[in-house]
Image 1 (tube, rainbow, N blue to C red):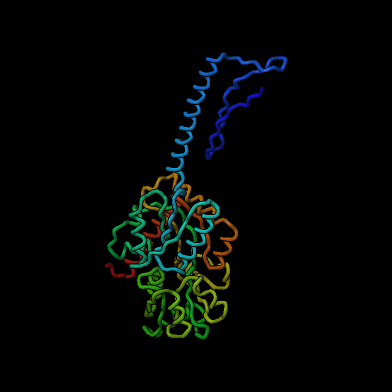
Image 2 (tube, rainbow, N blue to C red):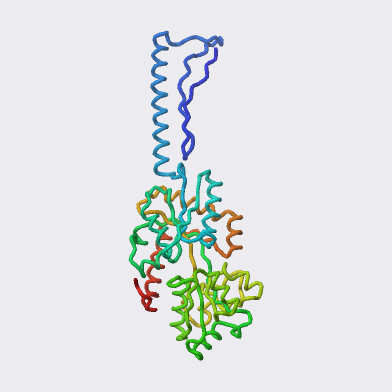
Length: 368
């Protein structure tokens, strides 16, 4: 009588390990089945087999437990905290990636908005979260700006673990299409000729756009009045109604109005021209060498999150960003994928921290 070979198979990320147990029967040369152990020996073998199987099962549980603890926070729901309101660039990006990761990795990823206090409420919540990879933060320039302007209960450099620089969004200086100013230098020349009469609006105060404007105003020695709004959309609406002279806003906030010839783009603050607007020069090309300012979006985890967990999360976000439908959708929204992760993203954050600190000091922003 045939007896199949017993096997214990363990699944691991590295592959499949199979443990065969010798058959308890052999065939004679005549094809007849003959026991090769006596009853006592067979009983002993069965007992040892049960012990061996138990040991293998214990090993499997141990292997799975270790892998779960160090490699996958995915057994729980992963929360991505957006420290700003619903509908903004950070929120849209987070929701697109959360949905993509949920489908690709079969994990539960949810987005939670915690706006307020210049993004510090949501940021502090993540800084205090358990460092197991289950709570993440979408970071923007305010992540490093706030530490130069106010007292915080966290440090952006050592209170978090960088995961990935996800995407960037160019900033544009724009005017109403009926404005007489055809390029950035036209606007700045008029500001110098009529000190204090022209205005520039943006989201602010003390936002990345405000700091970018103050930097340009100082470099150009142009006296324009800054008008802060509670978000880019109200600032753009004010420009459309010709209540302000100009606006500095991110590409997604003005691209449709520029395409519709309601607004005119004078220059981009990005280091290179925008592919979708090749005729719009950079601020650097307009005579202000090395000037650049972009809105960036990254994801960070609490400090002391295990390296293996961070690496896995980075892989998930990178894969999501590389999905053609996600990349196309983001570019349509004016969000251009980057995918710089780990140490390299940490170096980027440090550079941004230093650059904004210098700009804040040079432009005499008040520290509170």
